[in-house]
Image 1 (tube, rainbow, N blue to C red):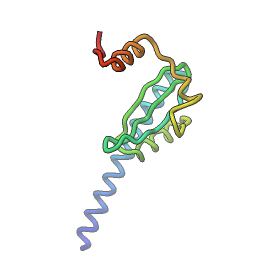
Image 2 (image 1 turned 120 degrees about the horizontal axis):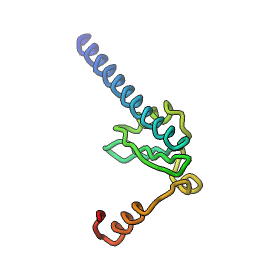
Image 3 (image 1 turned 90 degrees about the vertical axis):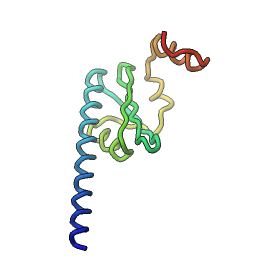
Image 4 (image 1 turned 120 degrees about the vertical axis):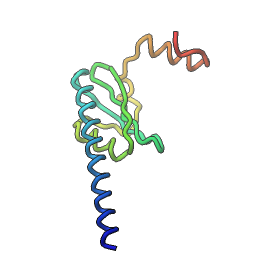
Length: 118
Protein backbone atom coordinates (compact mmCIF):
# COMPACT_ATOMS: atom_id res chain seq x y z
CA UNK A 1 0.00 0.00 0.00
CA UNK A 2 2.81 2.40 0.75
CA UNK A 3 4.05 2.21 -2.82
CA UNK A 4 0.59 3.08 -4.18
CA UNK A 5 0.29 6.02 -1.79
CA UNK A 6 3.66 7.38 -2.90
CA UNK A 7 2.71 7.06 -6.56
CA UNK A 8 -0.64 8.78 -5.93
CA UNK A 9 1.04 11.60 -4.01
CA UNK A 10 3.66 12.04 -6.73
CA UNK A 11 0.97 12.14 -9.43
CA UNK A 12 -1.04 14.69 -7.44
CA UNK A 13 2.05 16.84 -6.92
CA UNK A 14 2.81 16.70 -10.65
CA UNK A 15 -0.76 17.65 -11.51
CA UNK A 16 -0.65 20.61 -9.10
CA UNK A 17 2.67 21.78 -10.55
CA UNK A 18 1.28 21.66 -14.11
CA UNK A 19 -1.84 23.57 -13.01
CA UNK A 20 0.32 26.21 -11.33
CA UNK A 21 2.46 26.64 -14.48
CA UNK A 22 -0.69 26.95 -16.64
CA UNK A 23 -2.09 29.61 -14.26
CA UNK A 24 1.24 31.47 -14.45
CA UNK A 25 1.20 31.43 -18.27
CA UNK A 26 -2.38 32.68 -18.37
CA UNK A 27 -1.57 35.40 -15.82
CA UNK A 28 1.28 36.60 -18.07
CA UNK A 29 -1.10 36.79 -21.04
CA UNK A 30 -3.64 38.68 -18.94
CA UNK A 31 -0.90 41.07 -17.80
CA UNK A 32 0.22 41.65 -21.38
CA UNK A 33 -3.38 42.38 -22.41
CA UNK A 34 -3.77 44.81 -19.51
CA UNK A 35 -0.53 46.58 -20.40
CA UNK A 36 -1.57 46.92 -24.05
CA UNK A 37 -5.03 48.26 -23.17
CA UNK A 38 -4.24 50.60 -20.26
CA UNK A 39 -5.51 48.16 -17.65
CA UNK A 40 -8.09 45.40 -17.66
CA UNK A 41 -11.00 43.87 -15.84
CA UNK A 42 -12.31 40.37 -16.29
CA UNK A 43 -14.99 37.79 -15.73
CA UNK A 44 -14.57 34.02 -15.37
CA UNK A 45 -17.30 31.74 -16.72
CA UNK A 46 -17.50 27.95 -16.46
CA UNK A 47 -17.89 26.43 -19.93
CA UNK A 48 -18.32 22.77 -19.03
CA UNK A 49 -15.77 20.06 -19.72
CA UNK A 50 -13.66 22.52 -21.73
CA UNK A 51 -12.89 24.50 -18.57
CA UNK A 52 -13.47 28.20 -18.01
CA UNK A 53 -13.46 31.28 -20.19
CA UNK A 54 -11.71 34.42 -18.99
CA UNK A 55 -13.25 37.46 -20.68
CA UNK A 56 -11.02 40.54 -20.55
CA UNK A 57 -12.04 44.14 -21.16
CA UNK A 58 -9.37 46.81 -21.40
CA UNK A 59 -9.67 50.36 -20.17
CA UNK A 60 -9.66 51.44 -23.82
CA UNK A 61 -12.66 49.22 -24.61
CA UNK A 62 -10.62 46.51 -26.31
CA UNK A 63 -11.59 43.00 -25.38
CA UNK A 64 -10.48 39.42 -25.68
CA UNK A 65 -10.72 36.09 -23.99
CA UNK A 66 -8.67 33.12 -22.87
CA UNK A 67 -9.71 29.57 -22.04
CA UNK A 68 -8.33 27.76 -19.01
CA UNK A 69 -8.60 23.97 -18.65
CA UNK A 70 -10.38 24.33 -15.28
CA UNK A 71 -12.30 26.98 -13.38
CA UNK A 72 -9.76 26.80 -10.54
CA UNK A 73 -6.86 27.53 -12.90
CA UNK A 74 -8.76 30.48 -14.38
CA UNK A 75 -9.42 31.85 -10.89
CA UNK A 76 -5.74 31.50 -9.97
CA UNK A 77 -4.69 33.21 -13.20
CA UNK A 78 -6.84 36.32 -12.72
CA UNK A 79 -5.79 36.48 -9.08
CA UNK A 80 -2.09 36.30 -10.03
CA UNK A 81 -2.62 38.95 -12.71
CA UNK A 82 -4.19 41.26 -10.13
CA UNK A 83 -7.13 42.42 -12.23
CA UNK A 84 -10.62 43.27 -11.01
CA UNK A 85 -12.94 40.31 -11.55
CA UNK A 86 -16.70 40.68 -12.00
CA UNK A 87 -19.29 38.04 -11.12
CA UNK A 88 -21.26 38.60 -14.33
CA UNK A 89 -20.72 40.15 -17.73
CA UNK A 90 -23.39 42.80 -17.68
CA UNK A 91 -24.18 46.37 -16.73
CA UNK A 92 -21.37 48.87 -16.40
CA UNK A 93 -18.70 46.23 -17.06
CA UNK A 94 -20.23 45.08 -20.36
CA UNK A 95 -20.80 48.68 -21.46
CA UNK A 96 -17.02 49.24 -21.50
CA UNK A 97 -16.63 46.96 -24.53
CA UNK A 98 -16.14 48.81 -27.80
CA UNK A 99 -17.07 46.99 -30.97
CA UNK A 100 -16.15 47.91 -34.48
CA UNK A 101 -17.34 47.10 -37.99
CA UNK A 102 -15.80 43.62 -37.91
CA UNK A 103 -17.79 42.56 -34.85
CA UNK A 104 -21.04 44.04 -36.15
CA UNK A 105 -20.63 42.39 -39.52
CA UNK A 106 -19.82 39.05 -37.91
CA UNK A 107 -22.74 39.27 -35.48
CA UNK A 108 -25.11 40.17 -38.33
CA UNK A 109 -23.93 37.17 -40.34
CA UNK A 110 -24.52 34.85 -37.42
CA UNK A 111 -27.88 36.46 -36.62
CA UNK A 112 -29.33 35.94 -40.10
CA UNK A 113 -27.61 32.60 -40.64
CA UNK A 114 -25.31 33.97 -43.31
CA UNK A 115 -21.63 33.61 -43.90
CA UNK A 116 -19.32 34.89 -41.20
CA UNK A 117 -16.62 35.72 -43.71
CA UNK A 118 -16.56 38.31 -46.46
